[in-house]
Image 1 (cartoon, rainbow, N blue to C red):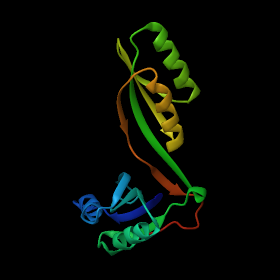
Image 2: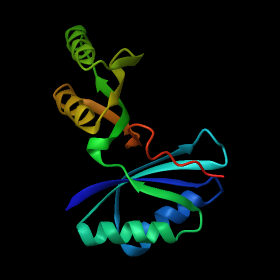
Image 3: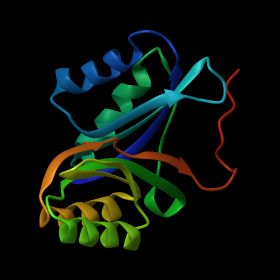
Image 4: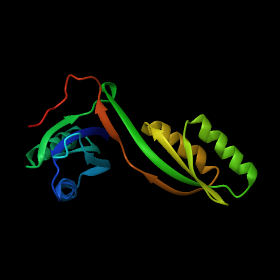
Length: 167
């Protein structure tokens, strides 16, 4: 099994995300993550999908996505020619002053941010590639993770060679 990152430009219409995710569920394909947001032109939405499967399944996913009427453009974001980022918010138990200081120190090392402080917990925001987010989470597990919210990957290809301008 391998992963591929697909970037779609789609019409910004109601139900478009449902139609895309429905394609995956009807065919039994797996979505590792999916993010969506409007582009500089509000008529279009950029969707980044991380899908897993063997070569044949990933090829079928791309072919099926191309058939959807809302999809205006699709491309693979290859790791060496793209930039990926993910946001995660992690609520960590900090039931003692020592634990709070230790967690804050690790937060600084990862260039993350404490975005909320309560008597017994901190909420930390971390942005980076998936490996960085995963590494931070592994370390925080030792301190007691109470909750996690992750956005999934958003990505863009490097440079200006393959920018798509839609009418």
